[in-house]
Image (cartoon, rainbow, N blue to C red):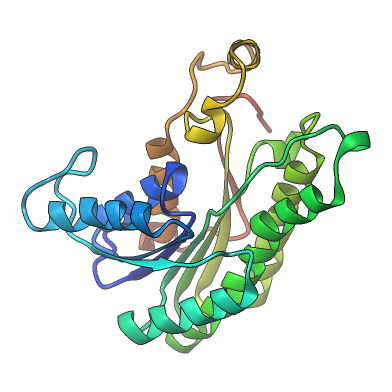
Amino acid sequence: MKLSGRVAVVTGASQGIGRACALKLAACGASVALVARNQQKLEEVALEITSAQAGTPVPPNPGAVGSARAFSADVDNEDQIKTTFKSIISELGKIDILVNNAGITRDQLLMRMKRADWDAVLNTNLTSAYLCSQQAISSMLRQRWGRIINITSIFGQMGQAGQVNYAASKAGLIGLTMAIAREVGSRSITCNAVAPGFIETAMTAELSAELKESALKMIPLGRVGTAEEVANCVAFLASEEAGYITGHVLNVNGGMLMG
């Protein structure tokens, strides 16, 4: 999965799955634009990548050969997205790969959920992917090559009590993925989704021990996944080897959902 010469943009790159994706894409040779709100965390991820490139590997990403630059932006803000993507193209020359990973949760039962919490989750998880894809697609169309990868969720496929906003946003990403794939496939641009199951991240760390134990019982492989395992799938879909895959949802869930 060689990505030398490719420019990748990863949203929500400061931690969790986004960070792992940025590290993996850089290790495969891509120049990575790191996008998130927290500039300090972005700089730390960029340092991991550039230190490894300079020959002083920083675990868990030894031997990276790509490069990284931090672009602080709130993907809930359309103007910031437009400004950030213009800066990325100006500084890096193009965009080959876009990983729409930014996401939040605002959990509550339907009858108690506030409209503000519904809007916040839909805007960050779904609308931002539409806006970022819209900003990146012109570069991909010009070069007649591109990869858009949307990080959805198993709960966008099977639902989850207390997460009507999150599940709706992630299900919407699947529809967005398929629609984009049909629109731009003739230009050698693919659009796919990766649907993680129960992954060990800062977001899942906040769940109760009871809920974690209940989830483990539903996973045939008997363990939670890692952000790196999700990132491996993202890197594959970003590569030439995945050139005949589009409109697909790749499940990374340990067998928790099959079919």
